[in-house]
Image (tube, rainbow, N blue to C red):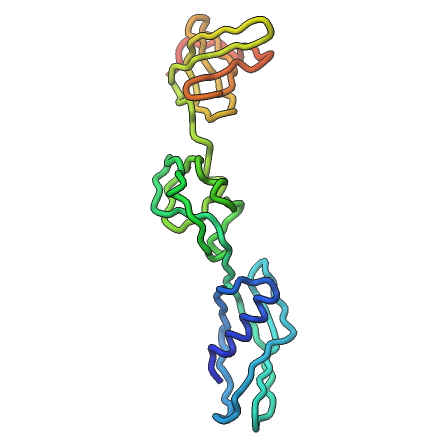
Length: 220
């Protein structure tokens, strides 16, 4: 009996149970049984118990053919399934802002997936990497961040927009921030530290109803 014929029968059963068509199957300790040369053996898998969470499965392999008694074997194995995800096209350094050409869809083994990952290219494109990534690696959401529009220590334009009044002034960012994030900004005149929302490159807006959070002598 050819091992490939057995694997094809097992794969068909696993695919019917939800595994991917290109999954890798392990059958530790299994050796195909000897059958008569002229038997034209036909393998069939039944009683499949497949745990997609860890890839483990068990099943009954039945082999029938001409001029032979049926053979029934219990199989226990593991399947390394695959899933289509966005992955890095090439090696990416920490701090890289992902472009469309840096991301492509590919099938990866589920063992490479750790925690929450990007499921669509749009989940990754435009984000910034927190650490180096290798080619073919899925994008863990915890390793991506929105690009900083304001760097710590940068001079920023501070906007105050409330009913009947619109003011702008210059401040100094005490921390980095991306669009929509709130950061502390130093007023160089009053030395007060205010909370402001990042709204663009080196531009922040005073949080409505916000008040100074502290006073400082200097910022590094």
